[in-house]
Image (cartoon, rainbow, N blue to C red; front, side, top):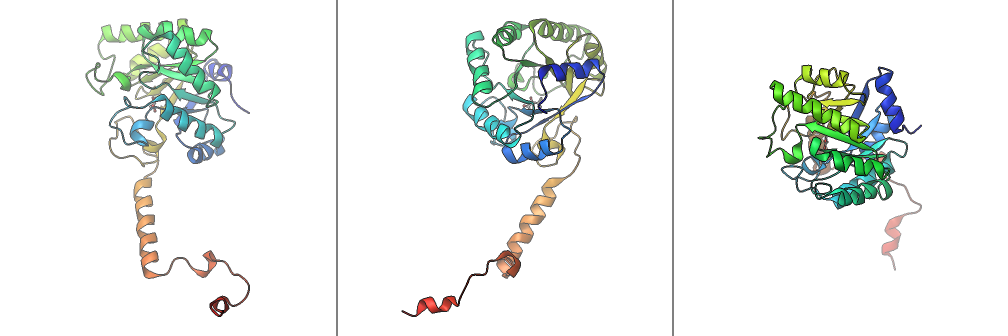
Length: 277
Ligand code: KIV
């Protein structure tokens, strides 16, 4: 059964942890949803780095996000899917935000959108929610504006910064967000925020006391080794498995041992006869 926004919200009140993972294509989405346990699939704009080879999430476009979000929906028809609004899709104003949010819902079949930013984004969040588009907020380390934050580093370290983050979480809750991602903030601060807002917090580098967790699936599987943040736990190391399989395939092709008879097809008759006119 496809989860709803209110299912996700009630997980917090029922004390059930929420698991969210990224997906960018149909085959991974199918695999993830066949496990039957992951609560939310996020078509993250981390797509830009993981799948498209960009150095940051900044160049990712709406067309790229929609292309991948559609694939994820095809692969996981019953999943609760959140589409990540790329840089430039909502910072230009409420009208653009609603227009692009609608595209995620109507064209890609997403259930909600995610956007980065704190108090400055509350108006945009409210406009999206008023237009019927559920919003997941994202505070702390916000990769689209990492340059302004001094790079990919811990946020909310001192008490003033911590107070600001709590105010942002409260403002976003008030604006109508149904959940908030908190990235790369101290675990103690994440716990205080989690206990003092009514919407679920989903942590990444924010400790175990958030209402849920998110990771980039390719990081968890050990498939993306260009940059591995401290908060990533590799549950398996797929890169060497993939490389070994490729080497073995190449070896067998070149030795003439692949394909074997079991991979071929048998027809009817003696095909050398087609050479006789
Ligand atoms: O783009 C993304 O994958 C994200 C998550 C890491 C939260 O924003």
